[in-house]
Length: 452
Ligand code: TRP
Image (cartoon, rainbow, N blue to C red):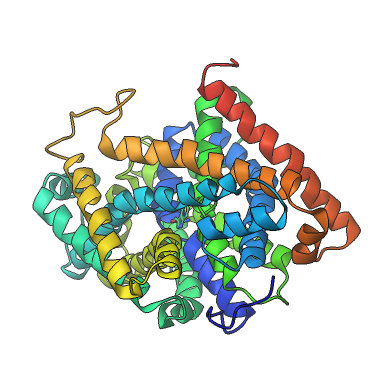
């Protein structure tokens, strides 16, 4: 398939890399990974998570990019076009459709957490962290969660930020800003890490995160780690596929993927170390859940020199990271509407934004007024959306993409996109066709009670 002159493409390979890295690096690394490590028993989770990144995440990221670049379309029409090219059932398009919906479901809670980050920029700027104790910090966070109006206001601001970029299309300046933002995020993290190392309990953090303890590897930890590998790399719903569809021919998919996956994983683990050395030094609970970074980081910022300013800068960078991720969660749906209807991009963006914003209100309420409302398996609205997307929809999307590329597409077409030497191609083929499907399949069989 050739490049249509009507589709915009990234200006160069660097922009694609930054955009995809911008999509991958976000709240998943900074907010979610640290607390998931704590909730799932520390090192066991880390080990399985890293294994999932390498054995499932990297090959499937390559798969998703290659599908997008070959299709040159949004996920739904793209899967249909690829199925037609391979002379297969066009029902494959529903895989693209499922991904678009998954992205919107994720955005509904992602935006609420993005709102917490925005709130903390202001808190840091106001000097609220100064000399704060662990108990005060936890109380501050609880106060924020207890206020539906405040959460709603910040959720609204975050949705507004996201949709105003999406309304303008993918070649926006924000992706270029990643040029400065991602390195800055690493830099400020190193400052934080240095501070945590000097006052925190880095030894305990290291032990907690990296001392292998295979006895703690539970099925639930494996399930969560696999799901989080998808979440962290933005896989399984077509975000990377859409970005790949804006990618020019001459870029190496494998190299790009490996850089992004390494940066993404490293960043998450560094945040984890910084957080846990503070957690243990302050005798906090590692399994505090979604509030973990909001309860622990202010303690660090509150006691380091220029902590108010550094804290503000940190949360600003996290907000940017979340922003560049949230865009990729809606882009597939918007691309589909724009490429299929007469609806203008900005109209589509605001309409979809409104729908996600409404669902987000339910998420806001699940942290306070509706906390006790359980949807399924004792999970509230936020937890249900999170588990449903991370542990079911994303791995399912990834599994089906792997099967499509590995078993339904013409092998020469795949090779043409990946453009790898024989040995590397064989490696991709083995992980894509066997390792990833078996790993995901086993997790699903366990989930549905078919294996123990
Ligand atoms: N990867 C992002 C993060 O870690 C979140 C994200 C963006 C995402 N786009 C996605 C997750 C697509 C799953 C699918 O914050």
